[in-house]
Length: 445
Image (cartoon, rainbow, N blue to C red; front, side, top):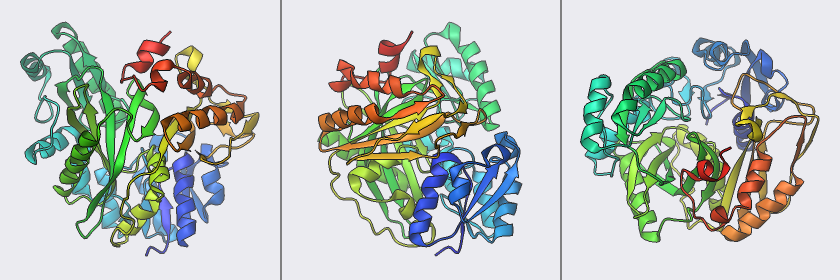
């Protein structure tokens, strides 16, 4: 087992990893920017190292500073969490060269599956259904126009190295494609230092369903059920649930089998998700793989009664997966609480929290790094908390979520709590009659 783990991240995921490490008896090192000196992950880690100024590029994305912090503190492993460097093959490779274990996949796996165009090609070759589109990164706009004409509009332009909705554009006709390509590529270059694009058929009104997988160094791969991530705004997930309320048992098994097949085809190690779009005819298509732990991993933990971060660490240390998935129990939602003004186009609202009260009670879990009088910084993602709610069935979980939100109080800044409360009262959501256009249809102003 590792002697010491450095967490190359911040916020709720850093605190989440620290908690599991403490239960495993592994000392931890937090890294932080100047702006995050008062963050809880700094307080609860055994050691903390400041790695630079507030801007991410000068701190959380600065690989030499993170490696130096690991070497100075004697950390022999690094957990990247999600975002930042979690899917950075160069970082994984530098960790290996520095004799530090990267708790995640190898550089080769990240390159093969983290690159969306290459991942699609890999899945296509082993028989996993994929959305029709380019077989790799596009050469230029001219090629994009040719492929779009072949498969038919609408199409979706996506950044090959993207995520979080960056570098994505829906194109409805040929007149739009040139401008969309240029804008998406520029955004991808700014966000990921990679402006390569690929193109695929845009599946209208689908559900976005992902399968949680875990692979070990012995070649075992297990799946821990699906998460429905359909409630999104501008390709950013806001509410997730498990199990999906729309897929059949037959589709569920086929998707799970496809996910395992895909992961085994690359000898996948660690936690990851195979993501699909599911249309109204129960046809599903692979869209991408995330080679890291996901924000929404918590709901899978709740229905399976397992600690996925623990499994990640044990697998990275060379141990065989011991927590074999069983039949999930109940239904679970995750609500992302963001520091955003939903009445003003979800504008970020950094600032000081004047009063904070988290909800509690059976079946309610809060993952968060904030506290009373904490100041939300303007430099990072606006996620400040996740409310995870379990119920014996979907209706029970909805009722419990309503009760929990009545207790949830954050004063001093605007948050997405009112939005979530409104969604829970929406008849279409309650009946599970929604798709990826749900927010645009019901909450656009």
